[in-house]
Length: 355
Image (cartoon, rainbow, N blue to C red; front, side):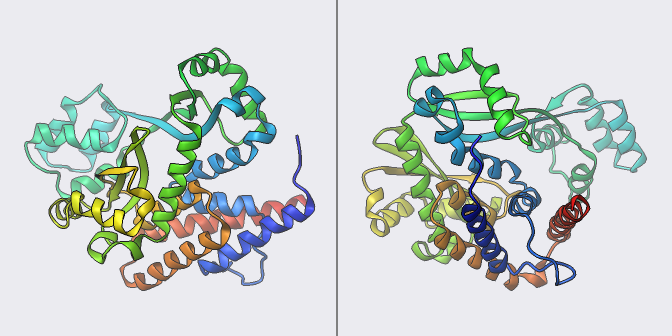
């Protein structure tokens, strides 16, 4: 395996240092160095629920140098997804009974005993269907703390040229999984899924989304950029793509559908970004209340692999917005920061002990 040169390691360290400064990160003692670049970035992405994003970026960097030549020529890493599952059982029902929930809520849960769900939204939807009402804030909060999804599979998604390539890769799945485990032992891949598409087009699309996300608050009015963020381009055909925008709230979704509406936004983006005129025909609003808009922006920019100077400007914007909303900091945000600090301190302790 080719190891990065010392100058390259120093360059990586400097980039991470700039990144941490741009988000105003400081260690608890004020004396500790920024430490190992990988451990810091991993902690940041894990705390924001984007832990596999770092692995995807690393894999792309290694793709043409370390991966089997057949796979490198004919495919490209598209995404890493994780399948999780929660099954309602007797223990869960008893746990809710001890929490003194309302009788109708407990009865609705008991009717789901034995059923499995892959997402919280599915479970909540089934409960509301049986209750014939919305979940109360207390019930929603209780489920957040009591429902624990178990890991099933971690899947690497590849874009490939055609179906024959996908079939060839499927035959050698086990061999390629061993290669990935050797390159990234910290990433436990269980399966590989292939999606037929244009490799160059896929990378171009991701870059366009990254550039759009970076300047989103400049190319769209406040009523738009305060409610949604570009996530990815869904390509219906070579000349027809749908821009998927993640929306932060259900209320924001309804607002955007009415004002300004998807048709107006398409025309507006065509005026602001002429390169999108021949590609972008539609916009789809997708509610993602569990995600922060700035996390979506950072994810889009990182996946688009735009240069570090532009990335720095994005993190500065994120930092300013975080500072402006300090008074509205939630327990979740505090927990995320605590998790980052815990990871960083653990990493520093490990380095000291190993020395």
